[in-house]
Image 1: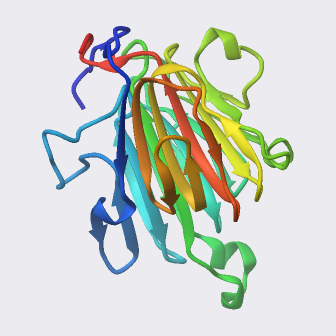
Image 2 (image 1 turned 30 degrees about the vertical axis):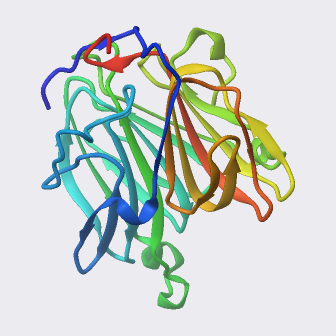
Length: 264
């Protein structure tokens, strides 16, 4: 992938853009159901390539025993968040592990890495009756600098999420230093997650760019209305809105203080 330039300027006017889950680009094969928030692979829309510095927000379901065989990446920070099931990661720098709900995971592709991601739940359980699809969200942002050393980090955060707050789980921002589960090599971005309890609410951070994605359940965003599973909201030069849910929801929020390509 070509090197991408980021800048810190933001649009002058607040803007809210709702993208419904049913309108996402889709890749469907026998073992994979993937829904793309932005242009990805064979799906290209020049008007939908990113928001802020978020380049990929893929919503994937992979059947047991299937997955993405070994393939390369370069100069990208890749964060994976599992909603249900389990995903086995292996890479060319010696990392191997199982990613499951409540575990934050980041892979820095840097100067180049090979990795695979597979749903090996049937092998893990050693019984086909316990096999299940794995459902996960994978998100990509560019690093501050190209050619860094490849890396990997993961940490359990389920206990912290139980309180229903908006929790920063991945960040490269200075103000989150020492607070997040995993670090990303981009000083302008942070990923927050909430498992929003019924009747509870959280407040979105102030930022030039926000991406709010309802991974599960149903939520309501102040000034926007009801958001259903798979819906996303792209906010520019905004923040401070209240997000709440009557039935419960799991929501991923990217806070970004830069955009691809520099000033708008």
